[in-house]
Length: 317
Image 1: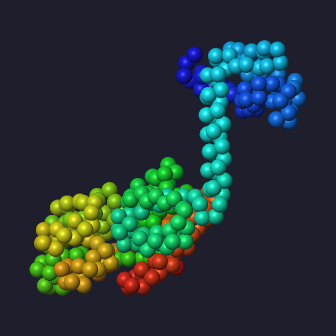
Image 2 (image 1 turned 60 degrees about the vertical axis):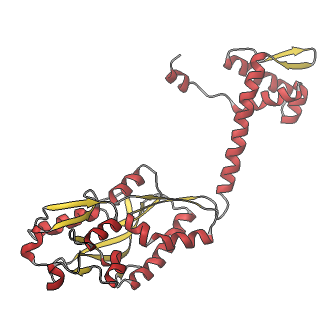
Image 3 (image 1 turned 180 degrees about the horizontal axis):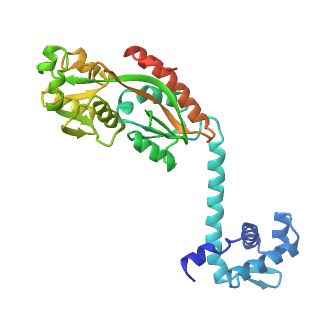
């Protein structure tokens, strides 16, 4: 028999297994029937059907005593494990039904993980310490993929393009700007000189990210081309390279607030037209939300109102 044929066969009948297990413990059709609130005939028929299904004799009748065959003894070990797993499964499901139990799988960008999520997670864990949390650091495209594959429940991310299967609840809006070393000519001129934009060495977030996509589209619309780009996955590393004068980056000022306050970096507009991004929560449209998801959404709205206020951003909540 092939593996596929074996897989497609009907599984063992749980009622027959239960009767077999009780019979092996009691050693009597009468006692097993009484324990299971069945007739002796029902137990007997169940055993005949089970032996026919597995293709071997499991029981021997010696007078009024029922003994297990060698196959029966081996089979009982398996059945004991099956029922043990079933009890564990029921217990775990019962626990999930208790308020404050369960899990929440979050997808979030690197910036959200560093600057936004910590306060949300801290409050969530304070209120519901038994909730199992996992955080999957991904960019917007990765979050969409993870949602479709059911690897995460909800994403804290930038607004994706054309995703009709998902709801996007906006939280706040930010603006991307040039960040340069204080000794950079642009910093001294207090503006980015249009004629030199294409000549700069840029250190930007990943090329396959939503942010890079927005930057690229912005400069195309402005008929500018960014030629020399080093792309990195760490904002901290990007800022360090810019601080020592190895290039120019494009980030929201809130992601470099400390460096800007210490005057280690200077923020400059990209041009007369602003490049804004919308941050929010992404989740399936028609999928019922768990209490954990609802709680996370509520906390995210409250925390992002405060985050936006601290950083001079527009809040949608």
